[in-house]
Image (cartoon, rainbow, N blue to C red):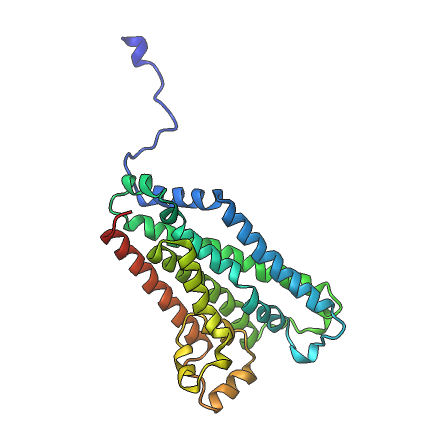
Length: 273
């Protein structure tokens, strides 16, 4: 008996048993980065933006006069190259539900809401890391081109808005797509719906005049506005086509993202998986 009592206490066991939010968060983080779709979409997002930025900076027909700043040159590209990260948001929301592999997760966490919140936080973190890497590497690539030294790298109110606003927009838009994925559950349907929402912004020139003010309150509007120059923003304000400013449009996207996540949490509690 004394020999048994002298044995050292087991190590490596958790001090607290049961499910905690920290463990749910760690589990979702591990699952997310364990998916090949996460690694591939992040890589495509970064490489596509860096590649287009480098090619644009290497084009002898592209001059600095049309851009002025490095921030404007890089962020304007993301209006087109944002779609891989939006796709990732949809897949992170719909993946387990679409494949019906979410059962064990919700058996372990029957209240379900902590899972949605953990997934949303992980999506936010992945999007933030991707946006930062994309902007930073694209800027570095442009500086290596003949055009790079001609572009201003000064931090002004305009360029700070472009750098930070674009990053914040990409994060909020990705979380919105995550919420859409959870709500619709089927990946293909969610991808179509999410992409239509953001493509409307790119195609708003073709929209009837009566619908353009409505488009300004869609999640994708911030992508165009935060990357626009101050002179263009002032022009929109002067002609009465600026219902919300650049930062206000980012807040609109963030509001859509919040509504989508709340809707996703309510939907998961009310429906079977």
